[in-house]
Length: 97
Length: 96
Length: 95
Image 1 (cartoon, one colour):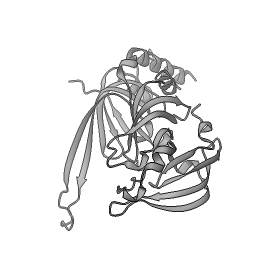
Image 2 (tube, each protein chain N blue to C red):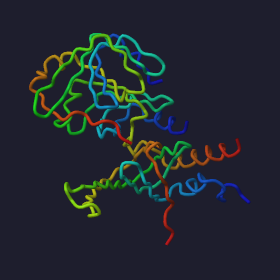
Image 3 (cartoon, each protein chain N blue to C red):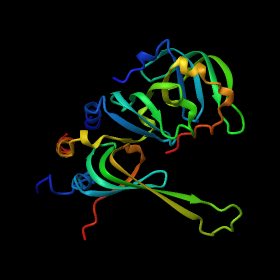
């Protein structure tokens, strides 16, 4: 099989997502979607047309255990972004619908 | 190595470095090294009213390990070139 | 190479992983960006009071602890009356 088109190891999945819109989950309750242009073995990424979503969980003081905390979502857009690999939890290829 | 090369092509361009302590610093990229440590000139901290700590700092050295993001000038990034170089590097890694 | 060479003998400001701010004259550094400062002071920021400076003297800071090293513009820095500056401390590094 042609090694450039088959998936044999996890990074192949990311390679096949180059120039496609990907979803990235980061540490610190952050998520990104953007077009993937480059990555390396540390999962450092370069993406364009990025939208970042930050989940800010407000735990209500004195609220009974199990009561859902309010979650505020902050969004922002960035043109071209380098993402340091140590913050990356997962990279997900585009959903093909 | 690839990402290091990309940063080298962006020297003398304006970038914004966001740190893992939520500080954002804009400045002119003067140099990078293999650890992605970054030197910035003519720096400006975002929301200086809240962060006056670096008022008198004109240039700085940032440790690569504390960087969360670097916002790059998209007009100076050749995305096609990046994708080709990434494919080449990943195939070379498999052969090794 | 993004070296610290240019900072030797200059007054610098260090931001550390735990959010501390230290100023001093850089006497030297090594490959691991360990740094020695002379005549150093910690600057403690708070919202309710002006900046407090604690003298530390000759100080060695481990490279692992350093977030950022900035060169101080002495004219600007001495013109600032630290006692009038009220600000939140810098948050610690969190991943």
